[in-house]
Image (cartoon, rainbow, N blue to C red; front, top):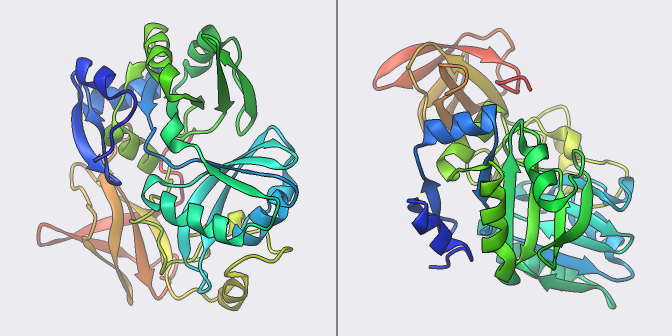
Length: 348
């Protein structure tokens, strides 16, 4: 099973590991709640080297991305990042993706680790000459620094810090770095890509500057508080971005895979992702049954929110429920009342 280039650093820091997307990655160090609090109040550092990344470069790269992804990369200039999705012919989400536009015809595409090979193959098969598709995951490390003090830590370590959804290039210890003002926690921060040989030194410098090591357990509670979807739970091949409440990532004025099905579904989705909260420590978890009026479904992501102090959850309901329909979720055999809310759960 693959491991991060920083695996030895995580072992030295006392990490507990888990299988995530076929990789052995840190689940936690000092505890999920403490790591969660560190990110919300100061800054945490995540090793996310398991995430996919490949470069698309050459004349025609922009049109290739436009044809394969539902957002429109032509809407942003070089030095920016964009959230988007790769859809199938039925409009379902094959993956949700961040794209860093490095130059006019040079992009770094960042799919989920689980879907990396499939997305690379998709782009390779669709790429016209002279466009090249070059995987860089095996040759790089990817670190994310997130939290209120992330800017100070990144600036102290690298000498610069890009703004939100901005992309900058620089060096660290003589090695090239690409840095984007992106992340998966809702906090200010940056994702930093460096050659794998420099990953350990960069990790050490960022932790020495004040970033607390955090694992995938805290990353999941943090992203859920912001209502960020997780592919494989809240998104998947049988779910469209419209059903997920993410029509904002669709740029309708260009052709892309799945567009015709989305047009047919627009305004009349079969199901709808809703957000709801429960009181106290009644925790709605993945798979728990949910009812809202005549609508039925199940929790896709649910947990106890360390910041808010109560249960939070996402669930798909079929058909889309009325806005004022009373909600119940089955928790340990009890029909527990819940309250529908708008996302994000936590305002930032």
